[in-house]
Image 1: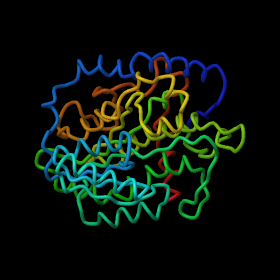
Image 2 (image 1 turned 120 degrees about the horizontal axis):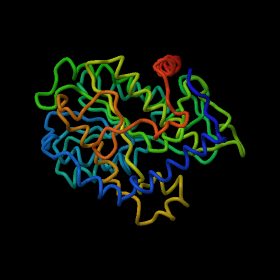
Image 3 (image 1 turned 60 degrees about the vertical axis):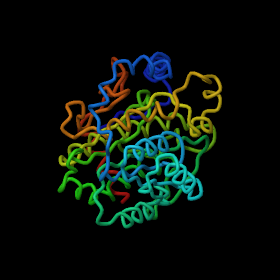
Image 4 (image 1 turned 180 degrees about the vertical axis):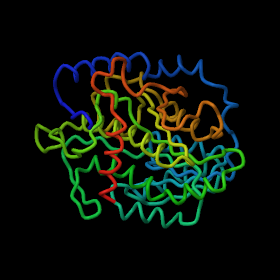
Length: 340
């Protein structure tokens, strides 16, 4: 069983303190510049992705836009999955104009809707997907709810955990098509899930998807809830890695990047860290690297978590209560399957 998510207490304080200290050293723009000096050679990733179909959720801004732009610049066909149709159209037009790549398309999809995820799968029916980038996410400041497959659920859970799970599962036939006929240079298809360094502050919750910190009023803590969901994404990556061996599943966290999402959800943090946060391109660098590595590259390890092109630990040093068992990971997958 997973450890319950505790909003307060000594372990939570130790996790938070360790996370902040680590973040100041490594997650900032200065950390990127320092770590990039040790990046593996660019030759370890493909610079020509012609014939590769990439699907990027949340591609209209921030990390998703930066990743979609970089992949299109390398010649990939890119499907930009966006909740806001007008912003998505603007993003696709901008990517085409900057890269000259006409194989960039928009699919309007709110991943907090199972119907929309199924529509996305229908749109891609019969097409092999070589790379799925699960980037869409949200950090809310107050409780909201939505209906997912006729069940009322808390909205950030519906997008961050349930939406990521549903999109990946509904596109599994497309990923399997790519696995059955691997791309000549890229090899096996892969799924790259963009998590957050904030997940280091949260243990895995595999059962209670509407915990006390998700309740309305002063109980609601969007930051802790977001961290919980991001920990679940890391666990799901392990779940999929064990379930679908013909596909490579990895997760990554971008550090602290200056994006519209951060500006809107954490305005005080964004203001305090002005000039110190990473650019969206720096935050998305490891996403693009993982998407373009040949599947037989030794750096690409299924089920692993990456940061700045390096495989990293999934817990802070000493763990502080965030270690989770294979049983808990399996339980998380089983419980999410009940929603779809």
